[in-house]
Amino acid sequence: MGFLNLLSFICLLLIIVFTRYLLSKPREFQFKVIKVQLLLVLLYNIVIHIVVPTKLPIELSTISYFVVPIVLFLNIKKLNVWAVYASILSGALYYFSMIVAGQQMYGHFPVYSYSTSLFNHGTLLMYSMIMLSNVRFFKSERFIIWIGLAITIVYVLLMRPLVTHPGRIFIYEILDAELVNAYFSDFGVVAYSIYYILFVMFLYISSNLVHYFSGKLYIERT
Image (tube, rainbow, N blue to C red; front, side, top):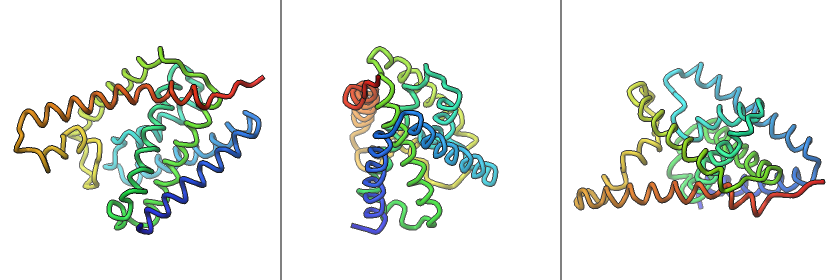
């Protein structure tokens, strides 16, 4: 296991332990802590996008760095389910990829880059667990997630001509079916059809995550 893989695994364990500690405290304290962390995430990313204006928020996670704090600070209850969904997906997929292949994917990045990414994605995970433990979400709210996904995909596609930053953008690799291009292009239309069908199925199934984890983590408070 490479250094970044191990570091990511340790960070994930610390996030889980710290979140469990927070959940043993009063609700007000939990939200004070996560608000401070999300404020740091928001301010850091505002600075980054001022310093590097070509680095637009395109990935689901970088979009979440702005949307999630706004939803929480302004108490936009209707969008809570979307904020939690985006946080789970962004945080879980990032830490999974870091634990499995972090050294290969990000080993050449500067220390500040993967350190802040670990903190940012870890904060999203903490936020989702705190929200799921304090707010009950229902299956009927999935339509908000579907609308959010549709808006996100349209936004990402519309912003494409403006993206000039040379860095790797995973969401375009996913939408462009880079996996098929690299390994299954000989199968033509069939391969692309199967890929996009599986992609839509994944989004549909993942839209149930918030309701599922809400049932597992929600704590009735008196």
